Structures are given as structure tokens and as C-alpha cells.
Amino acid sequence: MSYNNTAYSCGIEGDKLKKVEYRITEEHCRKMIFGVCSCCGGKIEPIETVDNSGNPTFWGGCKKCSAFDWGVRKTVWRVARTLVESNTVIPYPHLQENEYTLLKDYIDAQTSGAVDIVRKVLVEYEKELK
Ligand SMILES: [Zn+2]
Image (tube, rainbow, N blue to C red):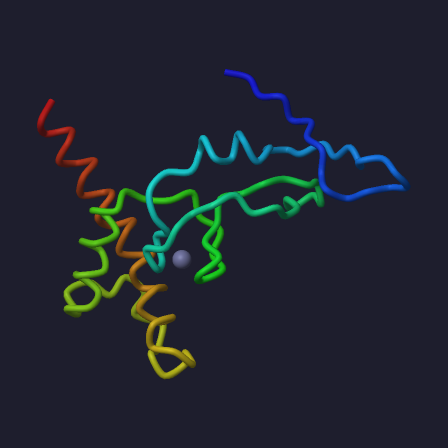
């Protein structure tokens, strides 16, 4: 599948639309987004940004918690959150609750790590089913 990575931004130079070459266009980005934010469970949407080389691009992200993320299946997030909230899984033991202004931010960070653990469990489970 190929994508046309040339898009037109809303920036106006004189009376013309400014042509911007995006590494990942908004349309392509929307196709790569799946599920909910792995930190807070919020909506993932295309966010206009620049990549590490300074090139304009769209990346998936969550405006609620300001994390760049392509999304995770909602069930995976829910299981991860439950494991963190019940103190069953603390994937980042070096993080301290009191270092966060909001307890929710601490829980979001731990949930993001727990999502990786839940995903690994599911990969092993699916291997066993084959
Ligand atoms: Zn989020």
C-alpha cells in the first residue's frame, strides 16, 4: 500500500496555501491508529508534529494525557488498568507515587507498562492456540 505524503497545510503564504511534505500524512496516520491510549484509555487521534529529524509529520497521540501512542485494544488497556489499580502488577517499581503531582499520572504511567505485559501474555496465549 502506498500513500501520497504531500498534503496542504492551513498555513498561508501570501494568498497561496503552503505545500508541506509530511513523513506520515493525517490520512495515513488515521489508518495506523487503533484502539485507545495505552496510558489513560483516552481517544487516539492524529497530531501534527515534527519527527526527530525535524520533518513535519502526523503521529498518533492522546490529547487528554499528551502521550504519543498508536493505540491499544480497549480490553488490553482495561485488564492492564485493573492489574495496576489492584497493585497486582507494578511494571515500573522505580517510579514513586509521591514524585507525581497527580496520582492519575502515576497510574497512567504504570498502566502503559502493564499494557506491554498483557500484550506479551496474549502473544504467548495465541501461540499456544495454534
Ligand atoms: Zn492518554
